[in-house]
Image 1 (cartoon, helix red, strand yellow):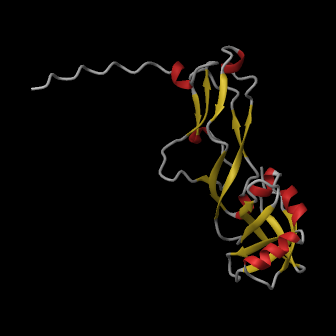
Image 2 (tube, rainbow, N blue to C red; image 1 turned 90 degrees about the vertical axis):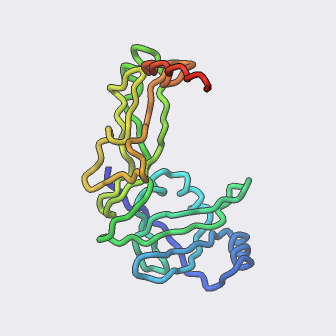
Amino acid sequence: MKFSTTKVVATRRSTQGSSASRFLRRSGKVPGIVYGGKGEAVSIQMDHNPVLLALKVEAFHSSILELEIDGQSEQVLLRDFQMHAYKPQVLHIDFQRVDANTALHTKVPLHFVGQENCPAVKLDGAVINHVLNEVEVSCLPKDLPSFIEVDLSSLTIGHSIHIKDLKLPAGVTIILHGQDNPVVATAAKVGGSAADDAPAAPAAAPAAPAA
């Protein structure tokens, strides 16, 4: 599924420092920064409540966003945000500019389908364990998917879905960080684990007696 651009609005802020940030938060604002691309880093402020609501939407974390700063728009990705330790308050938010001609690296959520009808569940009453809920991808901004679908409809007891089993959109590559073929989801017996259904490993040979 391709990205859908979401619009967010901010204004430049001229004051810097922790005291200025605390004043903004007391005023119902969120301090932030926009960086990357060919432009310089820009300190911004945003209305708090719309930001808090947006952070509860999955697509806000993995889609190209249209950020309007004082009437000027540019495309960005959400890169980081900080929350208060125990209050529903956003303390700071970071955005990175997106270049249409430069591949970007970002995390994309996994959406699991076909779980209820897969043989492992229907025939064996297995439990499906989601080992991964997101993956890091590399692609051009125009190819960034909102999510990657994981089809579980043929999963059988004792088997797993791996990264290389996924059908990726055109132009999208998963970044494995040195891992060969990580597990995405497994099917295990209720009260057990996927390892319980795997073939038993051959017994180890007895240790040689000490000299």
